[in-house]
Each structure stands twice: as C-alpha cells, then as structure tokens.
Amino acid sequence: MGRAPTVGELASLRRLFHECYALTASELKAHAERVEDAPVRKLAQPERADRLEKQQKRLTGIKIAGKLEPSDRLVDRCQNMYDENRLHHVENVPVRNRKSSM
Image (cartoon, rainbow, N blue to C red; front, side, top):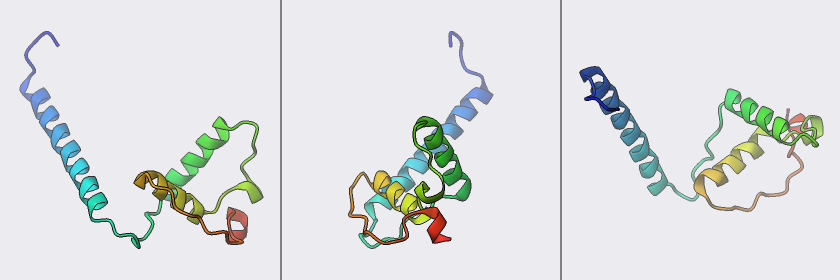
C-alpha cells in the first residue's frame, strides 16, 4: 500500500480473516466427519438455475432443455461427487431428466 493501514482497514482485514478461517474450519470438520451414507447436499434453486444457464452459454452446440435437462437429484449427486473429489456409481434409473421427474 505504501502507507500504514488505518484502524478501519485493519478491523476489516481481521473480520475477513476470521470469517475465512471459520468457513474453512467448518468445511474441514464436515469433510473429516462425513459418513459414507451421509445425505447428498442439495443445491439451492437459484444456484442450480445459474449453473444451468452458465452451462447453456458454455456449450452452445447443445440445447440443454426438455428431455436433455438433468433432474435436480442428478445435479445434486454430481455436485456432491465434485465436492468430495471422489467418483461414485450413478445408478441407471428411468428418471434422469427434469421433465420426467416432475
């Protein structure tokens, strides 16, 4: 910065550090205490819609709608695999798209 930080800047930095530490510690604790049969964390609907919109923009040659739109359960399951950094078998059941799950 080239100058000494003000009291307000130091307070903001301490708060940011505390919040980052608390978030990281809770994620590490949840990961360490996770059980194999733990329920899948469900994404919030706005987050799910935002991810779908980003995928549709990124994959311009594929129309992800109707029968090609994945079910909420499948999206949650795949996100859970990504969060755990582990691959699991996704069972082959008839309801894999959003249209048939409603």
